Image 1 (cartoon, one colour):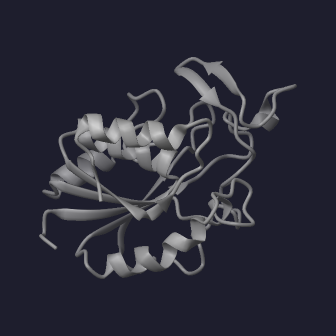
Image 2: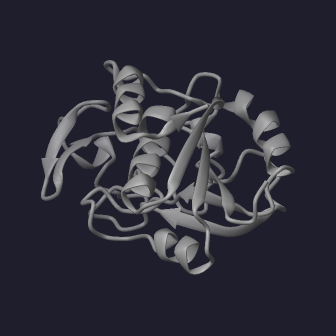
Length: 200
């Protein structure tokens, strides 16, 4: 793999795997393939959802609201989620079988109480950067390959933002799994095709 390529592994955490608080069906099945892929990349970055216990995206913080409904936030519509990936919890930890030793950087996102963060590059206001874009550009990376969880949320928005920032972007379908909430998986595939994001 060329030196200008980086593998970005999105949110392979216990709460997104079977038995977790926001489990993605088959999420754990991505781990062996991701571990294998890491051996083919000289550079690997991991991301980690990292929420305070009272995060505004949690349904528990909105009286009378149920998980998977939507509310309006100052930055736009926000899906409400079950409490998940709480800072320091076992649910926020990486899946035990994920090889974390190859990671050159771990980006934590979603730690600001008032705003959610699906993308590894920007929070959900699409303006507040995580710093990942600057890090990758300063190091001279041009090609970003994305894997992890979930295909139609954090992987999707990370891929779209990476493309907007000028990177060549590939998402490896077999190394992701979707929530597929109300057709979100199909919408993701359509978005990738329209934006020139390669779905390998």
